[in-house]
Image (tube, rainbow, N blue to C red; front, side):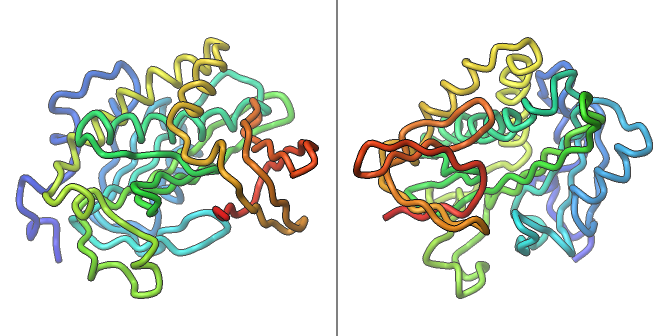
Length: 270
């Protein structure tokens, strides 16, 4: 399918994104591709060439879309959102995980506000609807010891996918906004709302108001208060998820009251 094969209402081009966009920075500079290997990969090229803060890289489809740990992200054309923001925050590299937390909160807030769906955040980087995955976030940083050159905030949202579009092996654990609400969503509208919500939380990060972002994440989490198992290369931990810290780590409490913070891994609900 070519770009011309998409109905105008289904396109998410520069014109559709900017129409009604209320942000001051995020999304004001747009690089649109009908197809690219990965919006994060394309954004890395642009960031290395000096693309400004807030540049939005968006594609109708990806030939090599990827999630965490190099996993493939299914990227059919014309139905979902695949985009990356180039950010250049003047914050210590240690505070960069706050950007992932902010993105999860911003996306869940946007979906709740527009569609009245129970969008919630699963640590570390997924958005769920009724405990099925609907979106993922991939954040990559280029930094020196004391300075961030840029952060690439990649987001993939299953917007108008039908059940048969999902690979059979993940149909039981995946969903889309269309499946959850029973009607199609305007992808450009959702993107604009996300950018607005994200800009507000991003401004909080840059101004040092991290607790606002943490509270927003906590209020939208479906992870905290639940018994979970987190598995990583370091092993696994099981217990009750009680909190997150400013580094994005998940605090887990075992049956004996001992608390431990894990900073990465795959989380499973017990």
